[in-house]
Image (tube, one colour):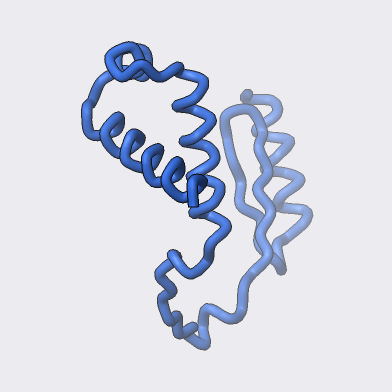
Amino acid sequence: MAQTKVRKAWEARIRAYRASGQSASVWCAEHQVTKRQLHVWMNKLQDSTTKDSSNIPWVKVQMDKKAETVKSMLLVRVGSTTIEVEPGYNPALLTDVIRTLQTLC
């Protein structure tokens, strides 16, 4: 029971800190709390809310048939230039383009 009270008190403190718009140093000094305590509790409460999946709103997603086929693509960077290489590319053309860019860049 005491742990629940402490947790609720820190949840309220953290809400007040965030709503204040003050820096952690200023807020902590005004509320007789160390920055370390504030950050430890912020992390602790953040970890517990991210672990609890019941707080996460789920959305139904329907995939389009076209989206199911994903092309694999390769990005080639030569100097400041980026080339997208998709399946079925012409290797000779790619070689020529890269050689040209190497001489220019």
